Image (spheres, rainbow, N blue to C red):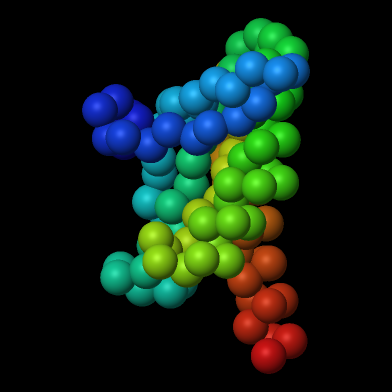
Length: 110
């Protein structure tokens, strides 16, 4: 679904300025945990990446996704940024497979 009026905003710092990042899409992925526990994949589509886009991605990868997953109250989350319009389908499939493999790896360690 398009993240329009859904209220998902992620604060991030660009230099000394605080900003809000509004991701493009949220995709619910059935990754084998059942319909009551979908992976919520935040998807950003970027043609041209300005410097602030790098900060947004870094914030999502380093702080937001690990933080919300550690909290555990809002389900399971992941982030993907796609920059090549003609490779989106292959990149999306690879990202979903990667997240699934991480979950299997974590489950087998327990």
